Length: 563
Image 1 (tube, rainbow, N blue to C red):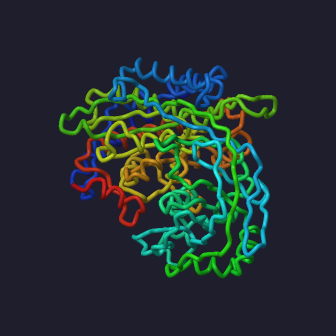
Image 2 (cartoon, rainbow, N blue to C red):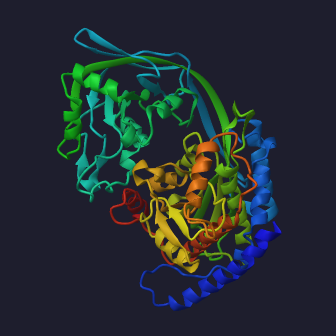
Image 3 (cartoon, rainbow, N blue to C red):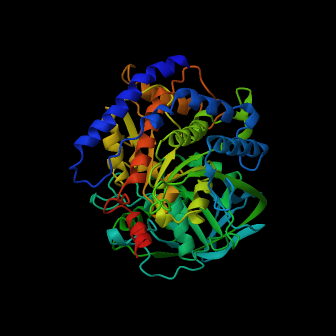
């Protein structure tokens, strides 16, 4: 540990000086973005020793893999609450506690039901898991489709900013919708972000469309390229599925949600007297209209239910400006992992050291840095450790639906999910780079660190929609999420990428995600300094950061902030 602290001493001073120098020359800047320097005391409070101390506790076997609804959750929550108190942070829940209760339900399909397509007395049977996968979010012992009419709705997209509507006003209540995954692949890159997946292409959006149109069921057609993963990944959803428990027990959602293979989709369209490729081509045009297939679907799912009372842990620092302290910058990191599971190489505890003991440790370290400031930012800062990210971003989704503080008063979300593990980098990967003015702040801060921002290398896979910040973005709050850079200073070209690939192949979502002897958290400190400066500047800014024109979340923010 002394080696890391010594190595960081000079960069801390240089970064503080760079901030001050840049701010002096930016007085006439016309961008309107705040450039306040972060107090040096706060930068110095971010160190590898603090980070590693928290990671060692959070990734220990004694926390049993931090799975929601287990003893591991109890121990994790106790540690986080204890640390919030020790730092002198105020309770984040207005009820005076550090806890936001999150009601979850686990639903497991206990049978292996056959999905039956029928037309004019002819039937086609789809085998559970091999031909299709389905589940229900209904908190009920069973869910079914009973001769529900199938309607092909193309990509299932309603995007007014792109003049796109796949539904054309058709009444689809009680029907089962068949949809393509991802966005329409258009030559016109001004629509749907070109190669970048928009939220309209995300599979979760497709199921939300089923709920919006009061459909009985939604079946997505799996294609490996557009989905970004093989059907074997979908087959993993035959295990227990967690979800939030809405007041109506989730009965407003479609009764059955699922996927069918491309082969079965083609056979279905042939059964309907249609051609899959021809209809898919039509779905790539804004003139597309829903196609009633003349085929019905029937299936019954039997469920085992398990209700779980989980929790988000939340603390805050009150802003220093009485006029602005009821506005918030929210930092998030998920505390959960997979608990105890299948043994791999003799180990059954899924410790989640990198994912996401590091991010949660970063949250606590940032809280320490804010507490070290002689003067706090004008706006209040919330530190939110969310549950059930690994179950579908559920803790963050619950906060976004039932916020402790109004989202219209929330200026930004900054999310951390896995910090840098292999030393300082000359770059930082920003997922969704260019989405909002938060990236302009990050660009300026990175330049002061003599670093560059790089975009996600695989924007077509929609990673922006796959971590906790997305739930804030979906509601309209500008959200920032960065992953570690890959150009590791002092290492050969390709070193950072090879270490990430090694982690993905051997440790990701496996019991082997444990603290490694070659970890170098100086890169994590470097990134946390950037996140600190980003939150501090937004917390002092004269105006809220905005989404870019054309971003799919801008309309929600505009509506939220409308007088």
